[in-house]
Length: 561
Image (cartoon, rainbow, N blue to C red; front, side, top):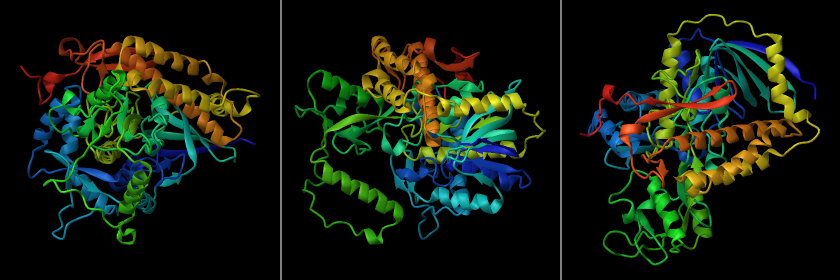
């Protein structure tokens, strides 16, 4: 294959064509039409990301019933456990209704009632959800194209050109076997590349951690890397996710075990439900199953005719078919935990700026500045519908900052730098022999998927997990590919390994239990010593970590007396 060097330029380069990247591009062009904005997407912008893979819900705050500060207090105490950036979270809630209005104006079908109010489904004392069609990102791509945003599909980000801590551009490559390699000079850049999901749960498989690893290599700080270990109960046979199933857990003896970890209905699954599953299984009380019982009044549910799919919207039909399929596979409600991951650790400030000048991070790769949700993997951050809307929020906030920013031409990118990036990008293609990237990916999954390794942690069990990680690390420099999709897989194997390394690096350091983070050997929350963020950074090729006090005294919600 002949490699063809292409040189491009733009004012703002956005890596990722999912809901976050598209939001940022639309808002930026509406605020400052003169800016030259380019999106690169390794698949197809409008089909990339997770928003159109089945989530289909937007978080909604009933601000006629609660105030943003009310929700913040609830979130800080029940979910974030005082580890979050309260200012960012408060701003997110305050912008809730305005974001929905923007989506509607961009052509997204957000369902409304006859009186014009949004059609919402209450999910808890403070939140509700709005269903949204799975074509949300296609509608947004159409809006981008009308505004003049340039889109380069089937093009993967390889790295950034950084000098003196400032972004000058990026390298990228076509995942088609056409040999196109791109050097893109850019005055600003935005990462909207998704979280790390470890390719374990099918619906979340598109979260490959690209931007996290590339930002780390560029010198950007990471925060809350130890919270990328989200797990969900799924049916044992079909692997179908069971949302809110943690409220109805029983062991093989018929004992109601939910009461062992909570005395009230949770907003979403807590890590203590995963711990309870593990404890019951280790005690020989498994399998664990769910019992929902008859509806109110005690009447047994009647058998209904199959639903009429012809009258359903695309989104409802998608969900119904998934549900019917799971019903035909599962004959009982045995459940097991399944790793989802959701590492979203690129650190940003309140304007979504990373610690590298000119580089922003939005959506799942940073989850509103990483620190915003606090002591919980994000999204969904134990709030269903928060993933999509947080990406919209971060995209708008970053775009508003970019629209008002000063722009100057970046320093030229030297030919030696271009050749170094090209050699790194295509190295797996030109090795005579090496490892299949799937071998590395499987080893990392062995380290991350077992709940007793990554969720209910203990020093000796983390040592066991790291044996898999270290074995993968010994292979990653010798990965081999036979085509460009294989090249992409090799780099994604690097990204998944780095995410696991960061997870255990920070997890060993945090010697307490807080929110989703559980250590069997340090079971108590320690506000005296560990009301801190762990900051992970690449220093001359070595992973380093330091702590930073959470500025709790400057936030609206203080620690209880």
